[in-house]
Picture 1: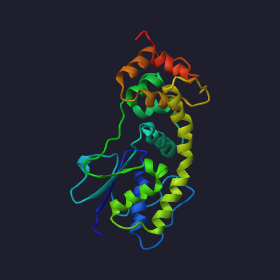
Picture 2 (picture 1 turned 90 degrees about the horizontal axis):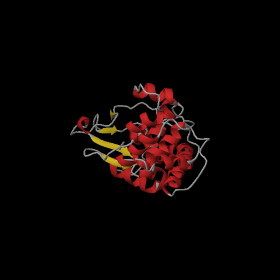
Picture 3 (picture 1 turned 45 degrees about the horizontal axis):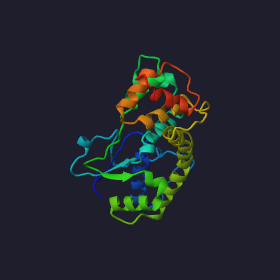
Length: 246
């Protein structure tokens, strides 16, 4: 197998290390020991696989067989950012974390982060095999077929086992994200009340971001109407975004 034949290019939180590790296991004639207790896949050396992180099409060379994981479903747009904090920083960010990470001077957590997140996208690559990570959770058989299409061979049992274990370990993150973010956004879209006082500021922020995503008019209304009010209910967000004064 040619050196640097395989390349994994990914944005934070889109399971690039999982794809990289699966390729390494697939290439190996022996079972590779990995820590099944971990939900991340940082414990395996990249073994000559070229890495592009964060993703950049211009860094993908012509002799590379490159793959890029991404999430397609709108409701999962901010799942990678959610995962990035949980896995890299081991917790969801607070106001201080966000200020330091993005070098923000202001103290308005919601406004400042929304200005950065409102039109965030993880676009399809023109130079990579794009593998839809939604299917890792929602249609595992299709995900495996896509992976086999990329590697151009039948998946080995140890590779399949690795992907299944890591999928199962990550389900708790998707379940929590669904319960707090996706369901909160659904209620917001349908103008329904729910107390979200127990959610972290970052989780409330992601509900807002998912709802207004790529819609500057709605984003602008929230930026104009929000003035450090406490957000207790989903309808508090709705009232701020649909403030008739703006």
